[in-house]
Each structure stands twice: as C-alpha cells, then as structure tokens.
Image 1 (tube, rainbow, N blue to C red):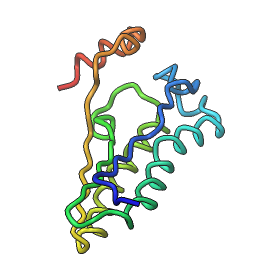
Image 2: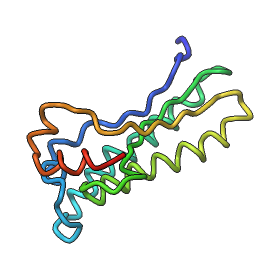
Image 3: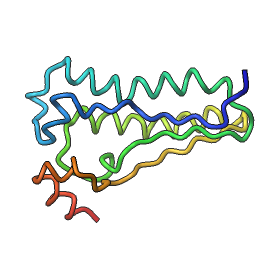
Length: 133
C-alpha cells in the first residue's frame, strides 16, 4: 500500500443535528446526546484520523486540520461546536510538536464564514457575520 501524500482531518458535517440547525441554542438546552454527537463528529473523529494516518506518512508530508474562526471570534454558535473546533486548534499545535522530529508537518487552518445559501437562511447569522472583521 502506498503512503498517503496528505492527511486532511476534516470532520463529518454535523449540520443535520438539532444543535447546528439552531445556532443560538443556549448550552442549557443542548442535550448530552446532541453535545456528544457534535464533539464526536468534529473532534474525536479528527483525532482518530490523525492518529491512524500519522504512522503511514513519509517525511515532508503534511497533516491538515481544519478548525474554525469560531475559536477566535465570538459568533452565535453552539458551545459544543466551538469547543470541538478549539480542541482541533490545540490538537494542531500539540501534534505538530509531536511529529516534527519525524519530518511531518501539521497545518491548522481556521477558515472564516463562507457565504452559502444555507448560511443566509439563518438571517440572524447574517448580521453577526457582517460585524466580524
């Protein structure tokens, strides 16, 4: 089996969970099951992908972990989602230090809001995003 050229730790979309459909849901209204689901899809799965793929990488190959601007900007998003994305940002730094001696680099990226039709369906989010610099 050929070694991978790149590992991209991109989570499965959790946009179908009730928590993601209502971006302003308070933490007190987020059930344990929904919170676990968001953390599983957005943090635990990325950790597992990184763990399982790292031994197969060759020197100079990257691992790309996708966090979110949510870790640095206060937008109306659910706490479990922001927690997961913050975990990925921390994981990027820790994993980079761990695999650097093997010549593997880790890039953590934190994209901002992307204008999609689904995003603007949540009109309350539009005004929040426009205010972020």
